[in-house]
Image 1 (tube, rainbow over the protein chains, first blue to last red):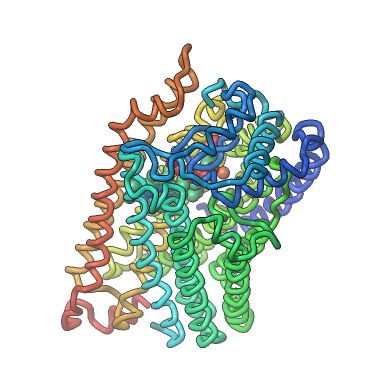
Image 2 (image 1 turned 90 degrees about the vertical axis):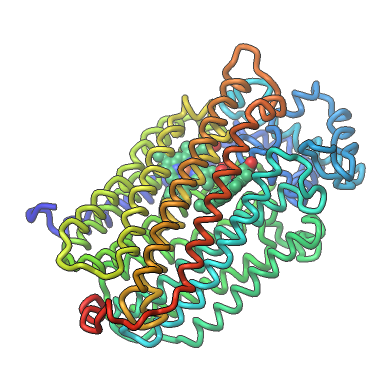
Length: 144
Length: 468
Ligand code: HEM
Ligand code: HEM
Ligand SMILES: [Fe+2]
């Protein structure tokens, strides 16, 4: 780089630029957190949804699935699985509870987690709650 | 070696390479599970293999960063490390905690591990890359604080250079941002929003500072170019990294419930994120072309140039590919994401750590500036094997991803996820074969350390001191 552009000029761009963008990012994050209540479906967070999120995490579901496009890419997207299952919590619960412990020969299989009825309800409620978050029209279609 | 205490870097590098091998073995297990669905089921379900794969990656890169710092900081600060004893103690704590965590993943069901480690007290588990039990996370924080104290005191009481200050800034940022892994609200949108403060602000923020400063150090040492010139470049690169990368976080805020203005902000700023990576490439080639001396460690120079190029390809080109909101709408959470994740992590962070190991190991092992030529040739072969196979993995996953996105999301009659997966299995097979080539490259790399040191006739002591 040329002689007229000195090291101290470079340092000032670094310091000034990073401080400016850190502050701007903090301000935007603050604004985002303020506007979230209109979009994030928080009024539907019940104790059962909270339990569902715990079950979701304790069994590492997103080690295979994505949820809102984040997670692993081995198994289907689940943010709209409630819709894919015809908005039936019953069907969802039956699917999760019915996984064979030894899997399905030759195919990718989901483990049997041995969940209680309450935990299954929680999961279904959690997935329903997630499906109702305003995610700007994502996923593109029902297949996720 | 200029300072005796730099030798604490050696166990860190050895552990890093051992865990790297483990990471790849689990990658291959998963790669096979992609096409032979019941492979190792239910003993090692896919999610367990994935945790082991990604967590080993992060842990070995952290070992690598710490080892690199223990080698680099005394030399830059021109004094012995503040406390070599602390460095060795933290090494064992980190290694044992890491090993126990991996054993925990493999030995008991994850839900049982969560229960055993008291996840209910402070639930932080079960989120991608942050699967570690809460106590392991606390352990990581303790190790990080001890480490920062140790290298920080060394810098504070020694010579301060741009290289060691930038490295310290990056390492401190790494530790501070990790604290957000303890924030896990029930509200899914808030959870996701701040999860990215760890993941994105790491790899597209503070880790770039670490990467650029290590690259600058190795280039100063191997090319002999004036430090002033290199430091100026370093400042400009990290300035661009933070100016683009911080607001670039917005490319993860398109579809997770955050406001729609992020589609504009995230697209614009993240589209500029390739700039710092491009500058690193120009920088590395420029410095090597202007070199004032021939450093006998040719392999280290190859690793350094490789880092710059592949990081630009993986982070810059493959990142740009899917970072604009209208494109990301289709590619979000597909095999395209996996393709980019692999080449970016490999190019930027795997390669920078291997660059430092390649540069430092001859000093650490024999107090000489380069490994025997035969070992260097093996290293260079392994560089090409690993790099070409990783580029192939990326291309196969990109092909799989395009087909997946087309059939599942863009076609007039979208097909179900599992149906599509079967149709693109051919590309997963090719990925697995390329993965085996990668493993071969890695084994060759490890084997290069077994080459005996010949009588240092090729490398004279004079050369060694001139290079140091
Ligand atoms: C060479 C053999 C390798 C194979 C066969 C392999 C395979 C895989 C597979 C199957 C996944 C899971 C994808 C999913 O969620 O469905 C994965 C994830 C991942 N691997 Fe590898 N891997 C290999 C090497 C590596 C290397 C060398 C790195 C680091 C540079 C790496 C970094 C990652 C990362 C960061 C993820 C998470 C990706 C994401 O969330 O998008 N892998 N790998
Ligand atoms: C060395 C630097 C980088 C690394 C290690 C890296 C790694 C990753 C990984 C592992 C993911 C997947 C995260 C997940 O599991 O959800 C990801 C996602 C993403 N990265 Fe990067 N990345 C880097 C730089 C970049 C750059 C410079 C850009 C843009 C130009 C970019 C654009 C993206 C985008 C848009 C996604 C989201 C993909 C999706 O929607 O599924 N990345 N990155
Ligand atoms: Fe990102």
